[in-house]
Amino acid sequence: MGIRKGWPRRMLLAVSLGALLASPALAEQAPPEGTISQFTLGNGMQVVVIPDHRAPIVTHMVWYKIGSADEPPGKSGIAHFFEHLMFKATSNHPAGALDQAVADIGGNDNAFTSYDFTAFHETVPPSALGQMMGFEADRMRNLVLSDEAVTTERDVIMEERRSRIDSDPQAQLDEAVNATLYMNQPYRIPVIGWMQEIEQLNRVDAKAFYDRYYAPNNAVLVIAGDVEPEAVRKLAEENYGKVPRGPDLPPRIRPKEPEKTTARSVTLADARVSVPNFSMQWVVPSYNTAKPGEAEALDLLGEILGGGTRSRLYQELIVKQGIAASVGAGFQGRALDDTVFAAYATPRGTAKLNEVEKAVGVEIEKIARDGVNADELERAKNRFIRSMIFARDRQDSMANIYGSVLTTGGTVKDVEEWPERVRKVGADEVKAAAQRYLVLDKVVTGYLLPKAGN
Image (cartoon, rainbow, N blue to C red):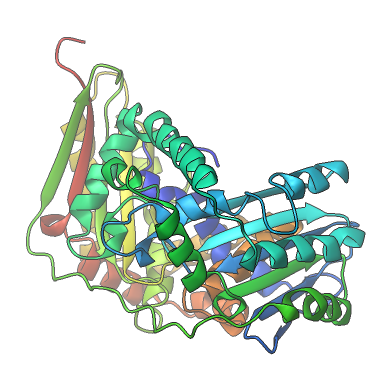
C-alpha cells in the first residue's frame, strides 16, 4: 500500500481499505451480471459470492476474525507473525507450493493483518478456484509448525520491524501517538508488535494461536469475479466443508476507552527529518459502535474538512493562505471498536508549524460553531460517492469491502444500505459530530520535527 506523506500510519487502513469498506458506489450499484449471494457451510464458515463476468478472473479471499487487537497480553505481534507462518509447509504441501501454483497460472496472492482481521487472497482464472480453495482449506488446519520454521520466520519479522518502524521517524512517531491516543483499548499496540515481545514468540505460542483462531467457524470466505453462486457453493462444500469446526469462541469484547479530559502531544525530533509535519487525532465511534447515523456523519465531516481539493482545509490553507504543502482529514470508520478521526498538515515555505496547526484548528471550530450549509453537504456527498465509484471495477476491492465489513461486526445488508444512510445525513448531524468529537481540548497531536542543528 502507498504511504501518504504526513498521514498517520494507523490511518493508512482508512486510505487503502477504509475508502473501500463502506463504498457507496459498490453498495449503490450491484455487480453488472449477478446478485450477491451468501450462505453458511455446515461447519460455520460464512461465504459471500459476488458474481462479475466482465473479465475471466476471480478473487478468492479468506478472512479470519482475528487481528492484533485480539492478542493475549504480552504476545503482541503474534497475529501478524502467524500470517507469515501460514505460508510454511503443511502435511500435504511443501513451503512455497501455493505461491508457485499461483505464479504458474499468472495470478497473484498475498495476505495482510490488521487490528481486527487477518486475510489471505489469490486472484486467478476461474478454472483455478477449486485449487485455491484446496490450498486454503489445507493450511487452515494442516500447517507443520516446526521450531525451525517458527524461529526463522520470527527473525524475518524482527528485521521487518527494524526496517519499517525502527528506521523510519514517521513510523516511530505514529506508534507513539497511537499509544497515547488509546489509553485502554488494544488498538494502542502496533500490529507488528513490540520488539521485546516479538523476540519471545515461539512454537508453543504459535500452535496455541493456530488451534484457537484458525477454523472455519471463525472465517469468512469472499469470492468475487467470473463465477456462479451454485458452482462456488459446490466447490466450497467440497474443500472447506470437510474442515472440522473449531472451538466456539467467546464474543470479541475488549477494554473500552475512558472519557478523555486532556489534550496531549507527542514530539519526535530526528536528524533524518527535513520538513516538519503534524497530525491531530481523536478517538471516535466506528460504524460498529456509533449511534445510528453518527458514523455516516463523521465520514461526511472528514470529506468536508479534508477529503480532497474541494475540502475546507485544502481551499483555506493551500489555495487561499498558501501556508500548507499538504493537508487532509479522515475517519477510519470500519473497526470493531472505537476508532480514530485525524487531521494532518505539512507547512509550506516559511510558514511555521504552529501557524498551520492553528489554521487547522480554526477550520474545525468553524464547523463546530457554524455547521455546514446544505449545498456544501450535498456536494460532499456527491464527491464522496464519485471518488469511490471506480472501486467497483476491481474485484479485489469488492472482496475487501465485504470481508472487512463482515469481520468488524457488519453484515451484507449494512453494505447494501450504506448509501441511503449517508444520503439521509443532515447538516445538523455533521455539526453535532464536530462539536461532540473534534474537541481541541481533548486532541492528541503528534509533531515530527527536524532535529535542532539540521
